[in-house]
Length: 331
Image (cartoon, rainbow, N blue to C red):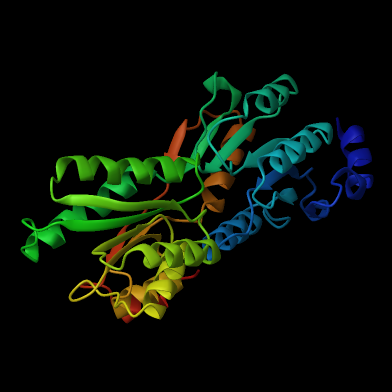
């Protein structure tokens, strides 16, 4: 196994065919073979994603006993599958990946299982025909995040005594088919069903990016500016939507303007929250590297691990956020 791995490392630049790649050196100072991990990251589309990548690299470092092969899939599922197949050929000890969408992974996961390589899913969840195809999921409870957001919105509208008026909602969805999009969308759509005065006037995909959402929101504003709430499925989308609305002369503020709801709670998002431009920001914690390190170390010792591990998260709103909260933010 070690011999095959050394050959694979020598030929690593040729195997990845244009994909981003990084490999740590052998951890010879410890006197032990490093744990070799192949990590397929979905992309670098947002500050959140960059923070997630850095957390993984820090946790799975040479100093911590690892050799890490990293691949940036540039937001394409086919690139992730190709990278995972390369990891299998390199005979890594573990594969970790953040899936672009929920489905389409069964074949490559079966290949990893046949090669006896445990797979850990992070950030976004997957739907697999056989749950034994992967060992653990580490990430957010996206449905709970969505439920927190719509409950806060219900409460604030009740405090503003707006339960009797039509609430016109623009919904900017994340990458369609991703677990974050499916769950956050589901929470909003269910809330609209139970609140007779809520109306979804527009629903478009922003693909979790500021640039695309700016374009999408600009097109929406050409059709209507009569908007009460904009529900964005991450901070990048919220920033893009706010850019477009402010250019169109709309004010984003929960007191006397458009109520913007977002997810992620990046430092930039929290700065906007402090200003009231984002009214509510539900945390989606990207610092998942230490959780992955803990799971891998337990598996390496032959210990049982939790099948599903949700990371710790909270929420921030315009009424309670402080500068101190923002200053503590590391991403």
